[in-house]
Length: 128
Image 1 (cartoon, helix red, strand yellow):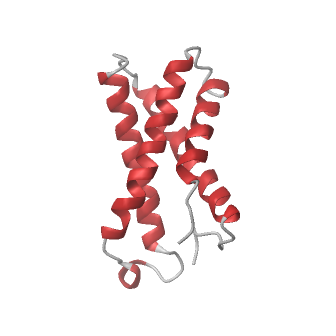
Image 2 (tube, one colour; image 1 turned 135 degrees about the vertical axis):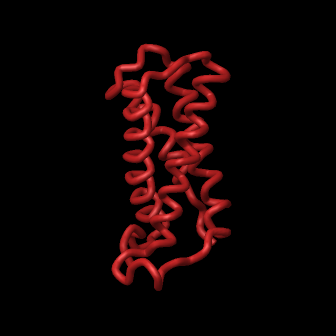
């Protein structure tokens, strides 16, 4: 079994995007955001094997198990981000802020998946 570096890369990408793209002035907020996204992606890697494989019913062109895993990673990362912002940082995010954070998590998940596949010499996993 190969080691997955995906949560680490995703966390680093989320921190960088929050700091430089979303112009977050508070470094602690960016660190919490990166940590929560990395935790979500890490947790989804353990939950996704329990999901049923619906490959035959949905599509023959796309690996639906991989797609389900990506949706789960983004969902858990977003949920952890919202919980940390509400409970620890006492921030009330506006709907526009939430959409930007979801976009950052989605982009970081996508890029970190390709980095992890490349580092572990695997074929890229979004398509069959």
